[in-house]
Image (cartoon, rainbow, N blue to C red):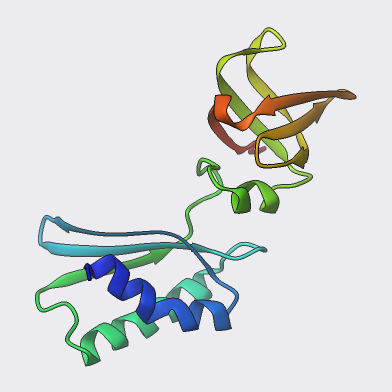
Length: 150
């Protein structure tokens, strides 16, 4: 079993108990040792305090179990607001929010679409802008992310 799988098993109960979703986990050799990086989120967004508590929990488990036997860096953080949306859960969490979607080929004569996510299924998403709905096949999405306003 590789390190990523071992850590997933290690944190599974904690994540479920605290309503935290594991978005991504990486374990790789970097300058100064190995880095274990977890990107986590919740339905309402993850707080710094939640990341810190998870970091402390994982650190204690790793140290007590001698799971990583060399110098390591542990990072627990949010994937960020501008992360690409790729899986169902990303789109479900963004229902009713403004998205920016780039497609591999034109849909309704455009390769860039901005609008509120109003529907989705396994094959398509539907965004609405100015009262016009656009159905975008998920297989044709090059990149989708939340539209950030400052």
